[in-house]
Length: 310
Figure 1 (cartoon, helix red, strand yellow):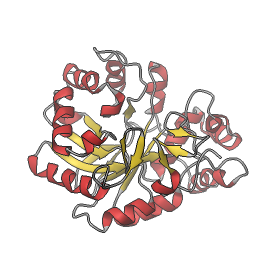
Figure 2 (figure 1 turned 60 degrees about the vertical axis):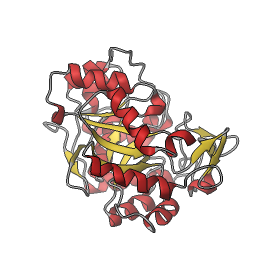
Figure 3 (figure 1 turned 90 degrees about the horizontal axis):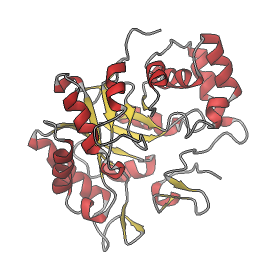
């Protein structure tokens, strides 16, 4: 087992933990129940968002940890609503106030598109495009209140449009990623641009996720005497990807920080799983509408995604 979780250095020079506690649907209370255990177990990265409605709890956990502020890496995200995207500075300040910490380590654009009146948009007449939103996020760096900025749910298609106008290359792109949806093309593109990839839903979603029961994952996990979850996280980190698993179970929290060294052939074996019939799909049912093939109300064609539930 590794002695500690490694860190990745982002393109702006700051270090980010390879494993962070994902705070979405974490059932964390106003006094940050569960997060105290996570920090005690060794988590030094917490990933939240305005959309998760628990920024205050995350901030309380940071303050009550007794650790120096610099020891905990905090990520939060710009909301998808038009009102937030149309005034990035005010939305950022509101998140910082709810967190009540000195600064935010990483601020992400949660989705490429915005939402107004139940409809997805990217630009006029409904609101600002992601290019305009990103320009306002770049200005946040000048305030000294955020150390790095990035995006979430971007594809090669949306990156090509964003980078045509950006003056700051995003430090991070947080996307759904696991052996059934590794998106190796996006990973290669991001690596070439110096953009770090971070996985949310690294196990799919829920205890019954097929990824955790996959024959290859289970077999390799048994070989290393670890859980399937530990194996998946070790695979992601071996590929230079950080991950944001979620758990409120203290024992699983501990295990998810215990990574193993995988051989190059083992990493490649996991890379190939998504090429098997029926195993190339997204699994985050909270974010996606399989019936309409949309994500947060946006058609997959708008997002530039070619993999869905179908």
